[in-house]
Length: 363
Ligand SMILES: NC(=O)c1ccc[n+]([C@@H]2O[C@H](COP(=O)([O-])OP(=O)(O)OC[C@H]3O[C@@H](n4cnc5c(N)ncnc54)[C@H](O)[C@@H]3O)[C@@H](O)[C@H]2O)c1
Image 1 (cartoon, helix red, strand yellow):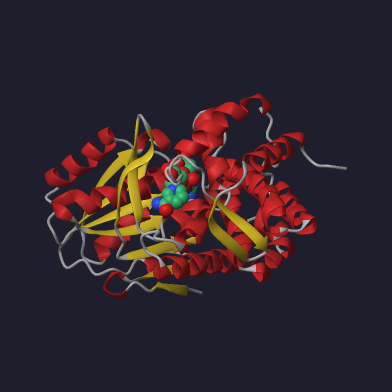
Image 2 (cartoon, protein in one colour):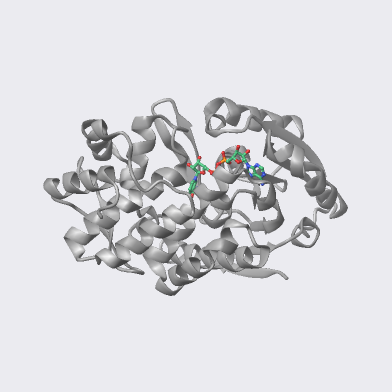
């Protein structure tokens, strides 16, 4: 069965189609136009043939480019490769770029589509859980510079997002669990009933039960679609999607990208933000404990092991893109599903939360 979630952005609006096979999901008429399929060295060998066969049947003339798997491909060099390949393959203004992979392929491919010939169509075909529930929806595209992550980019919406849940079956376990951190985030920031559902379906999610995954991915996409359609360019509300990210991004930067996967760092960031929320907004210890237990149940870290790093982490939080005049800004939760954004936090609270996330569970 297929579920369709609409991202309501007027003339830039599009559907997210969630199902279990490319054949029904990828019915996009080609009429002899060129399509460039961009994948990485893991997703290409697995799914390139199926996707190009269907696109060719729909009338596209397909070409293919593969980038090395991993965050380091979100760079100027690979962007140059994509753009030069597009010229060589004769892509014109009516062509489409198909991003077949996780968030790295989606962010790079989306940015290439945004700048090639001042913008061609692009189709998101996310294959990681994180990309399905987060990065493929909402139109943030971009690449990294040696000086930092996502420093160059554009808001550029895809023409459609095609989620084939079957692809999750080949996702490595650690990547899958990392994606679950963003799933938990939606319950905390927007939907207490959804958080309850995640608790109930924990075991089914861990065994990647297709029908439960369909329900969960669709709800995450609905929540993200709703938030993005109310605030496409992060003038305000969209910031709530950054729950756990102020501390999480600092961990990624200080420990070195890849030491903690993004979702793992966000798991620690949410434990940290929960504690700050308890001190600033009275977020209950019981609710905080439920979040921690669910994250731990998904095999995500809830205790930070490198407790000597406060000085460096604190400095990175001040230079975060979301900081305002060097003051880190937090999303804080008052009650499950009710959050505040743009919050300044007193220094002693920041430090106390750090001690908490380092010391682990209080007995
Ligand atoms: N644009 C946004 O709004 C947004 C939001 C969140 C994160 N991001 C970005 O997303 C990126 C992280 O995304 P990610 O976690 O998907 O990383 P990723 O794209 O590196 O994918 C993770 C790993 O899983 C592999 N993989 C993906 N799908 C697979 C499948 N079905 N089977 C086997 N292997 C598969 C990839 O090859 C890679 O090795 C970061 O660059 C982050 O900045 C963007």
